[in-house]
Image 1: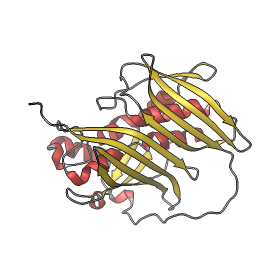
Image 2: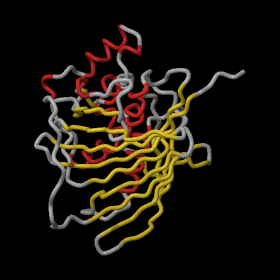
Image 3: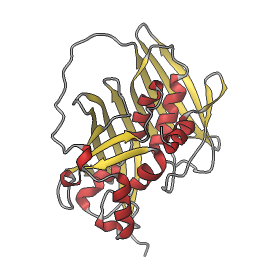
Amino acid sequence: MSVRLDQLLKLLDIETLDADLFRGQSRDDGFKQLYGGQVVAQALVAATRTVPAGRLAQSLHAYFLRPGDLHLPIIYEVERIRDGGSFTTRRVQAIQNSVPIFSMMVSFHSPEEGWDHQVAMPAVPPPETLKSGTQLHAEWRAGPPEASPGLLGIKMIAERAGIEIRPALDLQSKPGETPGTQRLWLRCTGDQPPPPEWHTVLLAYASDFDLIGTAKLPHGGYYGQPDMMMASLDHAVWFHRAARFDDWLLYCIDAPTAAAGRAFITGRIYDRAGLLLASTTQEGLMRRVRPKA
């Protein structure tokens, strides 16, 4: 593993305080508030630690209730909703300053055989032919943010998180084109893979990357511009098949609609062989900020 990936795993490896009570640390990933994927991943770790061995995460459904404070730890409270014959359900609340900032339901399932089909992976250039996140970040820093719409968040991925990203820029939607579309290759950095139990957690961490930014692409501008307020409102992930994050995964992100100050985004995550590993959805706040009179 790389040093930065090792640091990320230590961040996600939350502390057990008591039965069903955990504490995670916060980190500034270059945004004004906590990166949502961090809270999703830490909450998933908390829920997993209350579930019998052998049951795997099947889906999660989360709401971002308040902005997280970058400088405070996060308390995770797990409620044991149901332990059934093949499914287990947990509810997790993330708390700072004695108030919930995040709430998530997680379902776990014992693996079983069943029918198998999927939508095919779209044709995308292989990651080896695309620029790395480090290269794109350097280009972004050399010019105005408007010159590289949708790439501002690469700072987090390329420099902090230990996850490399390679966007297929020729397939990214342009201003005025709808729907918003991105195709991103993702993988963990370093020569050694992370421990097996961390691959699903890392997938959950990366699942929040640049979803709301994809919805902004048809309208031009860039993430963080002064006249735009953008924030994730809710987030869901369905884990269809086991993931390996030490090889390239393709994240296909589409934003089919934006209306009433909100945007709706969907995603599909494939492995290099074309297997559909996970599906995501998110609704985000995308509000125009008008200058005060």
